Image: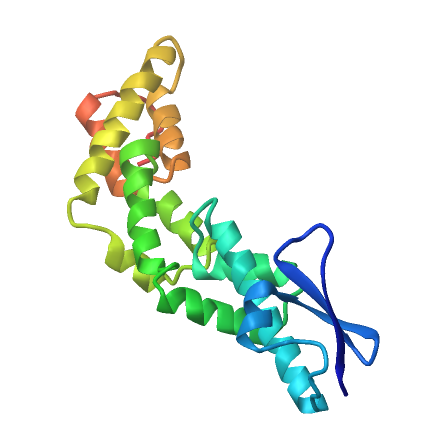
Length: 211
């Protein structure tokens, strides 16, 4: 088999169409064109062609992952799913993830620590909601546990108090205020211990205590 034509794609300046024996075979980036010396007149075997196609797909897959990560951080699981949804092969995905981790472009531990920090200090989420959200993002529960700092519970308590103080302004004339406030905090993902401590500090009495 012989590469008969290498033509630049009309709408994508960095990609080329490669023809084998005058028939379209695959596309390649300008980077791969140079890296693998893809040019007209080059004679290749079937095995070499398959290897070349795979290498070019890996490059395309990796570049797509970089494009996505340039907009927003993702966990390993999330970025794997996104590039998988684009139809890339298991091999391309595996090699892309390996390269992203090698260059520290994705790092689940770093992601989890930042996520926990943002959720506690900015979004005011409780621990249970944070853990649930991170597990949906494919994070191992053991890693989540390791990344929670010892002083996080203090901030959780302060957040719970702040939320209660805002909520109680709108519940003054309602019945069963205590239980409504408890349910509100639980819906925010706070643990029972944090909820009980925050509710107790406000000394709100009510019938039918949930805690």
